[in-house]
Image (cartoon, rainbow, N blue to C red; front, side, top):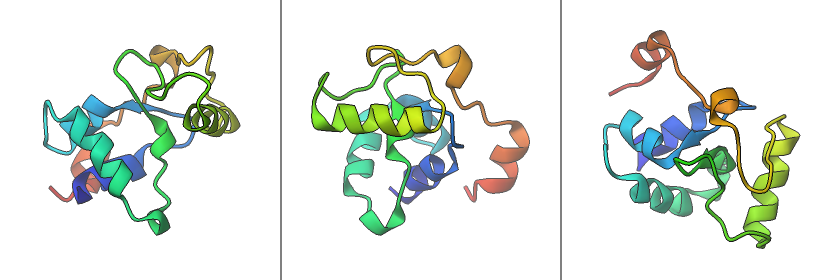
Length: 108
């Protein structure tokens, strides 16, 4: 879980990443659901930017109009991410770490 937490903490403000991409970067390909579990179990004092993680279709994963959906939408909008009916344009807002970031900042 610590690898997942590290990857999520690296997603810059104003960007998003998918559960699957986070799993891949953490060395856990195919474990997108595990990313969700890791985010739910993260200690609150870590202040992880959990709201920057969305599904692979560029959508929020919470039920529309639920409280978590509304919170995630608002937090993303405060960072300048455009959310239109729960959808985010990945071409514009997806985090694409460069090779230097991956090599120099990931301890694994």
